[in-house]
Image (cartoon, rainbow, N blue to C red; front, side, top):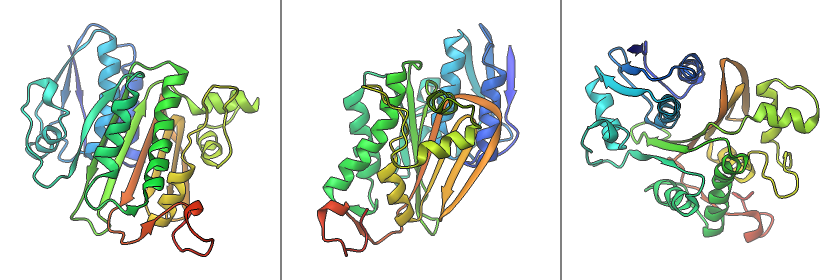
Length: 295
């Protein structure tokens, strides 16, 4: 038996990602054990991090471990029952009266239609999501689907994990949406493509630049987040990407790059949309060049 005790709150910030990525690194070779996740000290979890916790559990279960969760705080239990993360551990679903939870899901690389429907229903159709044209909605969907497509094309992961959470009481009314796969290492891909060794955070920054891609022939490459990146700039949201030992964050015109304390063999993308936004967004091609909110 192995007991894992998480020390504090888990937020979608550098420190929170480090806690979970370090746990994954430490237990990547744990096999055929009963693994008890003790949450006695965790009074708060950003529920979108269920995507990363789900990837951790996938890793444990792929090595034939059994997982048990104990000492879960009541408020944490409530949100993780609302987003259905705890259902497989014997908890019943709680109806989400305030529509704050995005359902935790894991998709196989063949679940194209289900993944696209999830993006549309859980994200773009969320009440209060910034007003946008149909064409822009399709472009955002394509951008997010590109992350899924990269994971599928590189073929090293069994599942793509997604989850999110809406905070209607915060001033910006942030909606956080997270996608995690264990199959794409941006540092390795970009270093191989450029034929020079790069730091993880620098490789992510390179992949975030519009037009930069490791795509060759029919093989996908790059993050494909150009439209979302522009949208986030106007919307005053946030993008975080973690891959290998790199951490990258864009927020309010500022870029933060850091080195993780452990390597994540995959990619984590977290996007924060501000739903306290009265603007209407459309693509540049839809209007004259002097329109205000275009990209």
